[in-house]
Image (cartoon, rainbow over all chains, first blue to last red; front, side, top):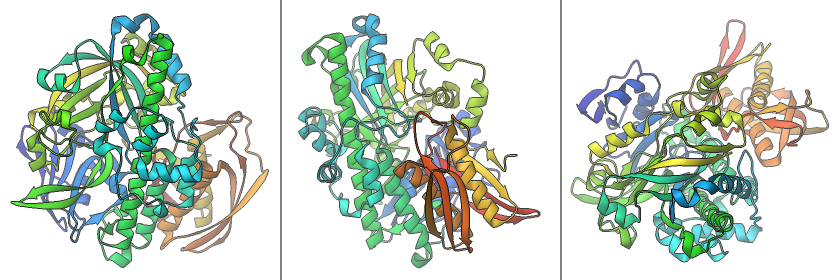
Length: 480
Length: 140
């Protein structure tokens, strides 16, 4: 970021001043340590690039897990006015509604200690993972259309899970404007075989144990307590989502000159929200999001089955409950108070999580007294954090927080660094059992490749955007 | 000799490809794409199947990306592994190519890296002293 100078606002925020044709300034959430890491990549430049887009409101934002992406930075948040603003497929990302879901159980580490290896192996065999993995759920054209329209509710109706799971899924696991007619034949074809699969790369399923509670009231409300076994799933819309993004991005790049929007990077190609192309993308993106929710719902159901069967326990004994499901690659139409006027905006969260505060009507009734759970997975060796959204998120970040640790090392650098080492053995020494389809994935995803999730979470906590509720430690992990 | 190299990118994979002519550049980029993704356990990828593609782009950079997007779709959507690519017709805004290769088979092909998408981010195709050079970022 040689040509960008950031001004320190306070211990956790840096201002990227408005220059040239930027329409608004940028704000990056970072402490001194994370600020130093920003110098090594192009993410600040990308925050500035997003600030060029029409209709952007207040600021181009980056959360503390910010890192160099393509087009938008990863960890980027930007809101656009429905009147005169844009929607950008690149601002959502290829993996539409990539997200996390956290489930708790009635079990403790003592209950599963001797069975952990069996459980991990069984999960690895029952949950299809890896590149191009295909699932056990084969969809007819008619069923697929329903998945795209109904999201997680389709999965529950088809027998994958409980109705109550929908209550603690962001937006009930469905975006209503979905229109399968706006999804290409290529995307539909790719989606037919992949429902109920984890995928590869940074996607995972982890068994975790609640290690520390920071906020008793919120933890009690979310049903979290120390020593409890939990499961975290991280995946998205698979090939269907990638193809939707790819199709619409190409279309918007092709017509970029028509709209007359000057783009500092082609990957930011976009369409006005009130245009036909913008509306069609929103309807197609919603299909991708709904598919992802159905996917995570099915994976949770399979996880429940594996736990019950392997441990020879009843559903009541295991009691695997969904704490929450969040998306972190999405564009949503949400209302915010902008200078005293409530406005509907299109909020892009590209590697950022919604973090609504107590009282917000979009939060499940049972959590409304404390706020929305925010799920933050860390690297393989560390585990995850649960945070709770705060009022300040509504005034500063369009109700958004970070989504993970954020990469700090490129994949090739990680492979180079891990040469001659066994990442699986190192993790096992740290008490994490890992099963992965490829050794390459393990090297690329080694803990050192990520920022310290603790630092990232602390910035959100200290800046009052989202408060720490609980820390979970991973004890086993399956990856593609 | 390899006619592509990686450049460092935090989250994704960036490659820089070179070629003596524009056609060479495009052929080398196809080879680089599949070299990043797949290793054939039996050495050469067979020439059992052929496909013809027609790709367009508003300019040379868009054409370059759209061409790689098409090759990636054929792999991800139709499991077609391109072993060799021959450019039949070429202008700065359109091309026709013949792809020679085989269907993906997990017994003979080892996947090294899953590429989700070929991005337009920071794409550059330029004339250099002794040929052509392009930069592209793959989302992985």
